[in-house]
View 1 (cartoon, rainbow over the protein chains, first blue to last red):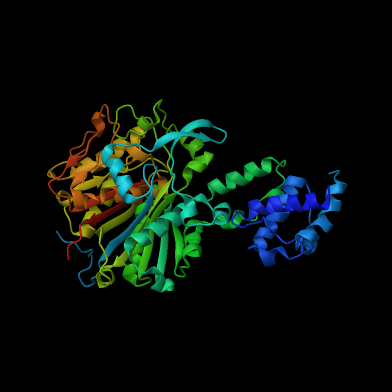
View 2 (cartoon, rainbow over the protein chains, first blue to last red; view 1 turned 180 degrees about the vertical axis):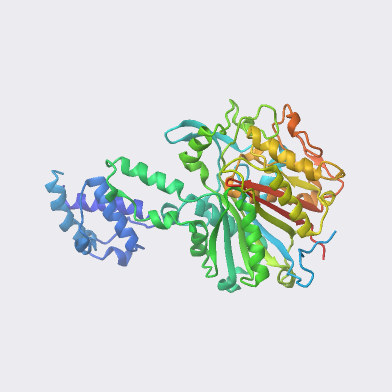
Length: 85
Length: 422
């Protein structure tokens, strides 16, 4: 899985978790919470959906790694690759 | 006929009036639409797929939750809360009150529910069944979704209401209880404006279907619109429905001060308990409940012009209630009409009493009494004087509505609303 594909996988989850948000123009460098209306419960949803859809576990201590699309790609892409994706 | 609730002459409680109605029913998303369908004999019962059980029947609502909620709020919240939020917003608009200017800590929300949490718990168990029942897939929203106050609490979030907001758990008497409790809180001065009534999301829990089926009390019929048939000889059980009706209640002086339209006045009520069985009704206690409500209103049986029966179309339950109604209204009540709303929409559980009252309130204006439909062969044991069967009738006068709602564990409620006269 490329980093761009990882970003798309995260955006697909955000589209379901925050269906009122416009995600067509998310800046990958900026914190997601600074450009979208996402609260802490929504981040728990994102973690849950990574678990359900992709069998990826994100330990609580590493939640900050999900701050922006770029940081998601850096952090999650190796996890996808480890699962052979 | 006294119009004031008054059991102790030394205490003159405030008069409480209905100033707004918001509802969603399987056959209408506004009072006008609901009423028109009750007069036209239009059922809201449809085929419905129930998890694990297959095809069944239900009264299903088609209101648009996005009228008052964001998509995320619908996803995170519950169906009962979406129904409540829709009804609360509609009721407030209908009341004409300047809600933005209102002190939100003086507003109370009292939502009657038969049950809450079954739907959400079943959904989560179903979801984790896809993950070998590993509870790490259990939603973090489970607890806020299943707390008993959920429907009222989500209304408080939606409308920014900071006064008391909670649910009244009272089985299928809950719709009446919401109104009764609100009237009590207004009289106590706890709040100045109440949003109250009852809601049901019960069609979305297979457990209630399976429970009624195991009890031999789930209706079946090849034509869904004919399945709910209280008082008919061939009735065979309950059609479960979702829906809600929330009212705005105010003390009369407050309503008059702002020039509110007044739908009617809470004239009297009574809640009692059978203390006799888990599920079987008790006509002696039901009759006692009705008589004590009449007493609280200072009325005689003959003063009542519309009785809305609770009858759910179970073989025994209808006979028991008819026994109670015959005892109270069987003689000397030539102006009393008896109807039933479940024949149109099924049994809306916690919403039933509140919806059924709403369907009759327009009779104060048009003097037409909507019927109970689907009575092809009246059960002789349900043949009580005053039944309005299959077609509406024009009444000589409609000044009073008596609304019965009964529930499991033997809870009975009777609410009397009368035409407002200054």
